[in-house]
Length: 165
Image (cartoon, rainbow, N blue to C red):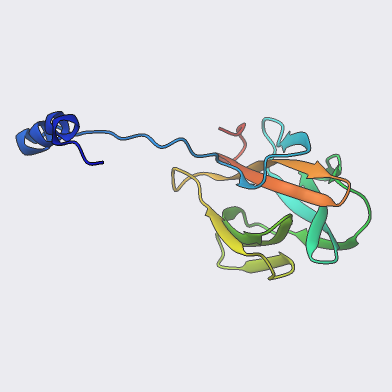
């Protein structure tokens, strides 16, 4: 039931021009936060130079990032067909994708205008992730996984040659 008395203080502040900040409790993960947690990010002074996704059926089963010339640890479930992306003098500046019970697709956008598709365009829910500042680039990935694949994913951003935020 609508109660005018409860809304009156907000209305008065709005009329006076006082900014009112309403916060929403929202996860920064795309997909589900269930299973085993992982997080990987570029060491200071290094950048993301490649990505491997292991696709099993309609799910991204595992993921691995390369920092400089070295590949990091593989995170996720088991199996899957490998799709490898090398970045050549470019950085990831945005990510789109789809999720359902698993992360189904990741589309990487680079600062040279390239769009790189990993996985299958099959999710019910789509997502996007961009850095808060235009000078930031992809520095890492966190997520949740079960044996069947990655359930939820979050992207970490930072400046070139720095750590992520």
